[in-house]
Length: 243
Ligand SMILES: [Zn+2]
Image (tube, rainbow, N blue to C red; front, side):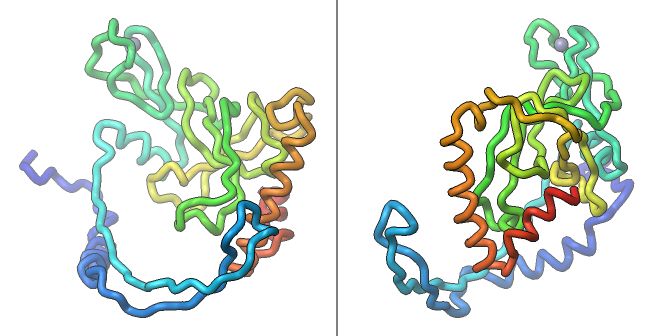
């Protein structure tokens, strides 16, 4: 193999050409501004008043190429609709997300065996995202869980499409692939296996105040979605029902 690497499959050149141009265009130059009204001056949204803020439009682009290295097979697997993990040949620990080098220092291995994993898992822990980075705003509010795939000893972050007040540690999940896949963890999502009752002592339901708190905070996210994208609360709830 030469220094540049041998290209076996190229799904990126066209995109690269488009974006290289865009990345250089922005150059942090101010292109314009907007005046927006938003709340100010209080700890609680309901106690705030509206102020006018100036928002500067200063576009810039970043072209970020990176390699998945020896775990590329996992991400290519996602495109092909397969969930793969690695197994340490010595201690037999199964990793998903994959690791090529076992983290047990006693093993001292330089390689791992690839293994197919079932599309089943359990919630190990979770967060309810009420706000997010720009790229995920329209998916709000969503549950991001660390999911232990059946047969794996580690957990990976997956979006769980469900009502955030219903999620609990230990919940059984079915892993699904999105129709359009790019070789990224967002290619998969999870839905709860139907028919599971929320345990009374779950971290959210052990105190009725916690659920009320979450519901109150969700209302802020719904109002943000409607103002920013015109997405209605009913549409959000429909996502969970039709997943
Ligand atoms: Zn090992």
